[in-house]
Length: 84
Image (cartoon, rainbow, N blue to C red; front, side, top):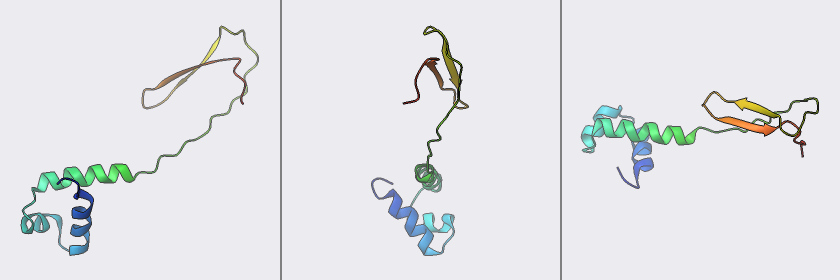
């Protein structure tokens, strides 16, 4: 399932066959089809950037604000950073 992976997944949808018979009829490995189908779906997910706004009292330049995100990313920003 090379460069035409998206078209193969689309063909399956249009065939009105369930995935297993479609794969059998087209000599496609069932697990491989699911793998690429899942990868294509994950790329379709829309990612949205959400602004973060907060008011902090003025701190000394050596102090930082630490943001910890659910995905494990840690961002350290100077507390005196202006919002522009």
